[in-house]
Image 1 (cartoon, one colour):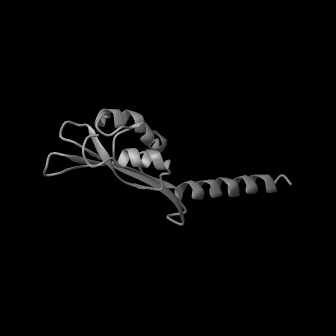
Image 2 (cartoon, rainbow, N blue to C red):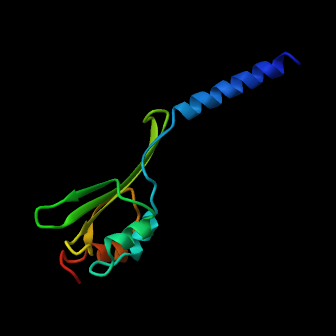
Image 3 (tube, one colour):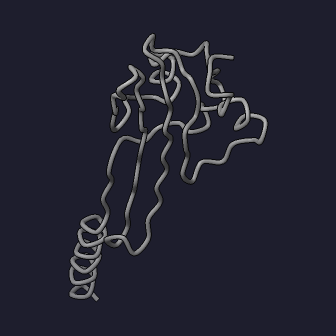
Length: 124
């Protein structure tokens, strides 16, 4: 029995190392539930960063002065065998105010929240 415990401990430690080595994350986790607190025409880029809990993964400047900001996060277990990702893309005007929600991936929003965020494409 005394010999079995150290062997078992080594096996468990090896398993833990292999499990952790198979996990990875991409991007920064963000609070997707806070999307519903943003209001087109009123909320600013700074408001979005604070509400979502961090910087976007990418910002794409558009030719008309607007900016498309993408918040994205992916966690992978067993090298893409099991993963979860979420993504939100928001369009901001030249003045930094939110114009509208462009797209989401794996983010649940109430229908009224989604409609509010989709807006009309102009400041409401």
